[in-house]
Image (cartoon, rainbow, N blue to C red; front, side):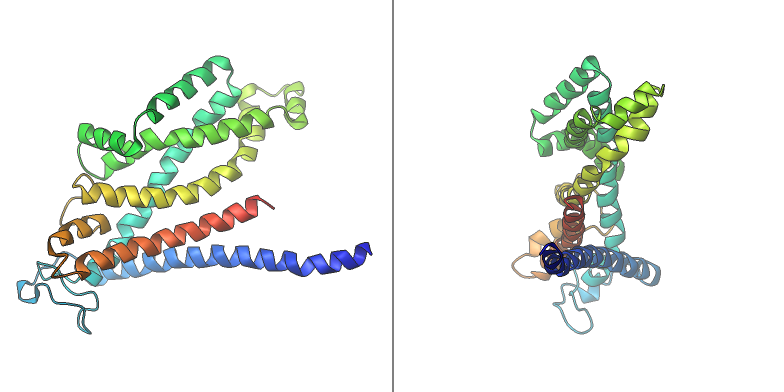
Length: 280
């Protein structure tokens, strides 16, 4: 009977593994394809070249995404922006993940004082609306890519710190951690070699999901004029420039928005796949 049940369960388990792998492969393929095409476009075309004789041409065979108010190809600019938006979204998720992971490890393993300082600092930051606080930080530092990365790292580390801290509080009481302490290993070595690696899986899952938020925040700041500056092609900036022509030239906002949706779908598929793997 037990063998028969195992035989029945095996195909279902294989289907689940195949489903997780397909989501991971699909999400990775979407982002990789976007980046490869973006690199090729940047090498073979000029996304900021203007041709005023081709202003506001609707989508056609010659210009599949149409042209903007300066005669620039929306397709070329939207694809070229991939090499900026996607890496920035990854970097904007990675920086707070590293900072938050280290602070969460310190809070969970460094004792009561460290825990109090880190968590109260996080409470102070979370008392303000994140988008408003990010705009304030960008205003203080000045618009630009570096300001965006610093602002998002300053604000978004709190979620990672809380996640890692909760994991560390459980892991530090495990038998193998006590054995490492009894074996004479120092506190820092135990934390980095035995505690931290076991707290990272959930961080990786959250990192992939956070890249979607980072992508939207970058586009939002550029839309407000606080992110990437013109004439650099960036999806949020393109939407902002196209809003003045939204009734007469809908393609100026629709196609950059569609690129954001596609990239976000790629990150979401990767996050879902990693979340499924972490639950196994």
